[in-house]
Length: 281
Length: 253
Image (cartoon, rainbow over all chains, first blue to last red; front, top):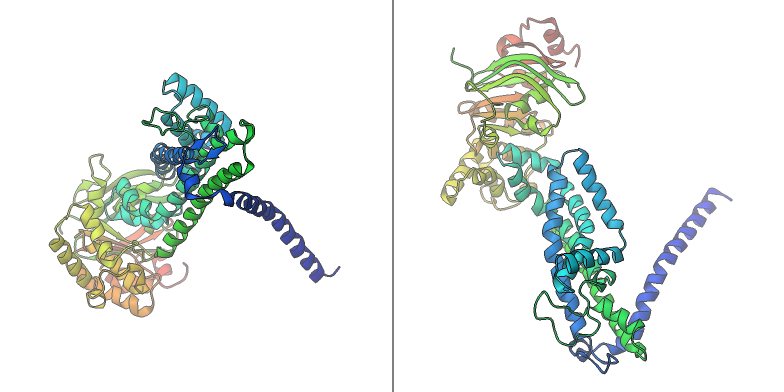
């Protein structure tokens, strides 16, 4: 075989492999859209489930997921961003730093059900929050931290070093330098990490299983110490726990969940490209 | 002779990897002159320059012995406010480095951090420092446009203006013309003559020729040691040390 033929063969094989990776994703999305689209309606989104959840809409679960996403944000961002700033700007190369980094890497690899169990033990039982929005938000918040920390740290480190040096040379303190010259330019990357983290939080079932999710709760939560329904758990319930559940409703829920998670990714991409375009250097 | 503005006394500096960047350096820098630190690469010129406003603090693991006195006071004394020191001893880097933002924002950045609030005062300082850096006429109509839109030479003069706005006593120039064309270089060099009336300038030059053009006094460094220092008129014509003579005449370096 000539060199040209080898080259052509390589291109064909690699393209095929790439396609094999992409095709299942496209199939999943298309199938869910095809099956779920007929269910999508204003009523489906705004009505509570009825008749043992076999009829009606998904409003409490949808709203619950939105609330939990906000809760996750409130828990995760301040901690994650502070950690990222510490790691990128202040931490020396020492044993403490290495331990922190090891902890973050390991946190990222922990199965989400383990977070759920930790949330049950720590927030629901030990701290006495009960099965509640606050317990769920804390659990989801901790789960998203590794992703947000890593992306935020990368974004901070990507800010050119000379901006820091110049800022310091003009009499800025270290914190002023971070505040005025580093964080503003790291923001697109930080926001991307945040949105991706939230997308993951919105779609997870295991962490909310024991900490917040209600099986069936047609009325809305009144405080952060109440339970709430949530879309991923709702989908799990109607797919496995309710006999005689119309398949259409299941795909309707799946589609809504998929759209929420995809929209997070989409927004993250848009934010990043928009802010990159405005960058001056 | 008056007391020197900057006095370096038996200064040693060792980096974390144990290379000796400076060995027993002592020199005096007097007010209102251009003092040039020249020598081949790795002689310790930039290292010494960065010690004067303690930008050297940013490098981890360095060990220092000896003193640097600014107007008679040890700049490494624990009570020294480093931010205030860096406003008194301001730095212009080899690569022109505007900060992201407008021309105006670049110049007012340090001033605002130093607590200057009045827009009137800020505006006055922007104009004055841009005039001193010979940039005012070129940018007065576009102070709000991005500093990155300027040419290389303009950027470097902006950086000089940014330092001047702080009204420092000393301006450190670390090879400020390295990336500039001959015309921009000439503009920067010319501005030095006017600047030294108000400020003291310590400069690492681009070349021996530049050193000879701009210096009032000069010090020749080699491998972290001060070989000789003195008035430029003598140094560049009748150097006392053989190594200085060899370097100036281009026999090495």
